[in-house]
Image 1 (cartoon, rainbow, N blue to C red):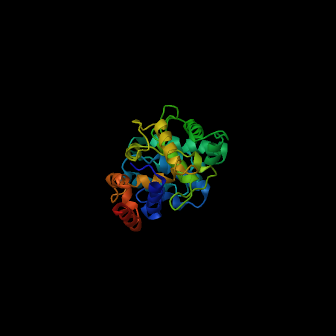
Image 2 (image 1 turned 180 degrees about the vertical axis):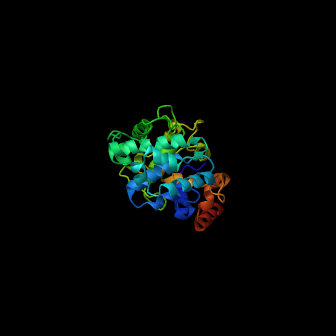
Image 3 (image 1 turned 90 degrees about the vertical axis):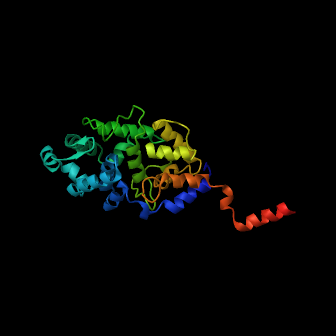
Length: 279
């Protein structure tokens, strides 16, 4: 199993590239240079990131055709306008009524706090060693406006809050893939954990836990923090490419992780070792 920093850093260098983002809801975030617009667009994109990736992208294309400037749309939204714009909306388990409630839940948070970032930061304390407490606070604030369980699950039932952690990764980290914009330390981030990431993490020896819950997400994050304590979630994107992109399956990742360490030893070192043995 791969349990060394060199392995994960090599994955990051090779696969953490903008050209590998598609297919992923993350690709929509490049539309918004204004962080205030981006954070609302990111929340919608992340919360609808469930189901088949082709269906996710199709649904988000529709949503953002209706609201090209998500923050502006949400703040100006009225029940009559939202009902008109999304009267035939249906995405898997999410109905038009639930989407409308979600829009007004976001509107309420924006009117109270000014930005989604301010809402999140209001739940963060200097003593926090992870984003868990602040993220649960953020989820509670979003859920105050009514039932939106298919989009934001109840934060106190052990859920890994995968989609909210994904949203947070996009807005906190800044590199070739994640656009950033928020002022939150990356060391607090938690791995966005779903069934796919759970399988990959177990294959890589990052956790032995069987449930894809918050405890497991924190366990995987602690394992990755051994390799990059200031930014443990930097490896999330490159790990999860395997199994999402059609040209990168999970078996490829497993093969990389079980490859013998001698395979990466320079030839000159191998020759020296061979001569020493002969002597």
